[in-house]
Amino acid sequence: MDELNPTPLTRNARQLRLDTLVRLRWLAIAGQALAVAVVRFGLGFELPFGLCFVVIAASASVNLVLRIEFPASHRLGDNAATILLAFDILQLAGLLYLTGGLANPFAILFLAPVLISATALTPERTLALGLLAVGLSTVLALTHRPLPWFPGETLTLPFLYVTGIWTAILLGIVFTGIYAWRVAEEARQLAEALAATERVLAREQHLSQLDGLAAAAAHELGTPLATIALVVKELHHSLPQKGPVADDLRLLREQVERCRSILTKLTSMGQEESAFLETITLSHLVEEIVAPQRALDLDVAVKTGGEGPEPMVRRNPGVVYGLSNILDNAADFAKARVSIAAHWTDRDVVIEIRDDGPGYAPDILLRVGEPYVTTRSASARLDSSGEGGGLGLGLFIAKTLLERSGAQLTLTNAAYPDSGAVARIVWARQAFERGAAISPQPEARGTLTQESNNSHMRD
Image (cartoon, rainbow, N blue to C red; front, side, top):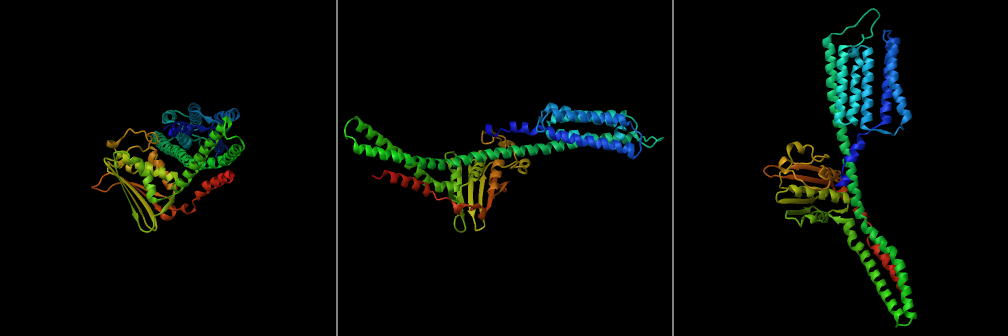
């Protein structure tokens, strides 16, 4: 569905805040300046102090321009962020060239811009920045100014050792880049899926409020309609009983009675359906989610039972949606049969949904319930247009909504020789029945409206 499409969210999540990058660059500039000053004045090593500070000042100048030209909340596009990170790599390479090349222990900082890119930019741009860093590392391994050292002495590291440093930088860029990208991508997917869950839940809650809105509208219209009916009745008694005016009054009175009948029906709908919409038994909850499947050519077996009185639950749109989503998923993959078993004890309430389909593939089973996990097995792939638009959000949304109600959802495969998937939802009975004892009394709305009408319709 369009409302669950994560493309705009993905694009916004990837945009790097300028303020974040500027702060990180100020930190790098301060560290570079401190390191150069300590080497020159603290340790007394000779190095091109002026050229080093020219390179550092170039980075500081770019930071000042960015801070002046753009607000702190500005988000960088991919091109701008890539250019700035590439500049940081070039600036670091220039500073390392003046201070010993890869023999300088600060050469490991080549990883920083690539790491930032991996968390905020696309893999293609991160790869380009990584290649730039590796290429400049190769140049620095071959040509650079001497490493600052004691006067009259030169520290020359073996080329094999320098090659090892180059290899460490290469592997560090590859490993940290892939790791950071994967972690950031999973965080983005989780945020997108949670946003989709919030929209689905808001829609379900909106639908559940329609009954209350209808009853409120009936109550508000009851008083003016009763006044109109009273005036029509008085005019009917005071005016001639025959003639065009009498016919118009008779028609007006009939229409008022029709309006009253409609309002009475609205309020009685609230009385009849409020108990169902507010507080229901576990059996009724199961029947509600099974009802849409009754029209399909699929055998849905329902079994309920338990110890003690049947638990009551205050109707939660999130729970209904989550259970319906799991049932729909089971129906999509089932060969011929789906079974639902609801059981309760003094401590727990359990709903178990089984199908006779292929079950979850081994590589999917460990990640089932995570966002964007879309299939059970290669032979079970379906081209459906269910909730989530095929994005793999269905089970994730269901899992999130059910866990918010206090449930624990376990998704497994049936034990051999049976086949199919098993979804087991377990609540602590206290959590399942929370709020059921404080449901609002539905009769109040209709009674108030009816009494208002009766008080105004007396002669």
